[in-house]
Image (tube, rainbow, N blue to C red):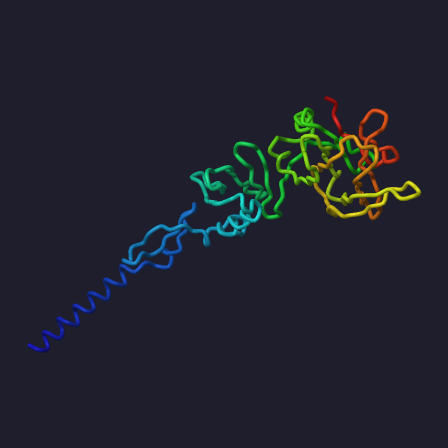
Length: 282
């Protein structure tokens, strides 16, 4: 009788153990990525459930967490919440929200990794933290040795500037602004465009030496190699307050930002071989 009871007990134990092994999820179940933005895992009760795969599913070698950090680095405090995921069609997307609303919805190019905003058309390279495809094709302006374009504009001509040189308004809005003006409504406003990545420039305040030469004084920024907006006071001054140090192929040239005393237009006399005036009339 004791032997029979012992056999029954052993049989029950074996039965329970076999059941446990059968119900235990296999590694292939736990890590079975479904191709979108979920992965199978195990709940406290042992049930296989779907969770976010932020650290498992990759887009161009980076996890969803990595992409969200990249986008956060770009937007800084302006972004309260960033949600990256694969949508139903398999496209990698990102929604960027402030405290109150979603203000950007991106779809990423599978080949280049560039993110394009659905509504504005703005394209951003979050890996290198910069806007891309900002400008229209301006090769007709940058002929021969022309390396830098400068446009003086006002609130009235801003729309013309955007339409003439930019792919969309969002690209224009994305430019870095150097605002040294106390009142931007009446300030001198400039768009400065380098020909390509090989061209760099510095911005300095400047003084005029006793012999009449422009001398860089206080550095504003240096080694800039992208289009920028530059604002400062004293509109239509014929005495330069600021200058650009243009750097091309190892050579440097000091270009004062100054207006003509004749008609108030941008004065690039002496620098026509390397600088083009992109200003547009009202």
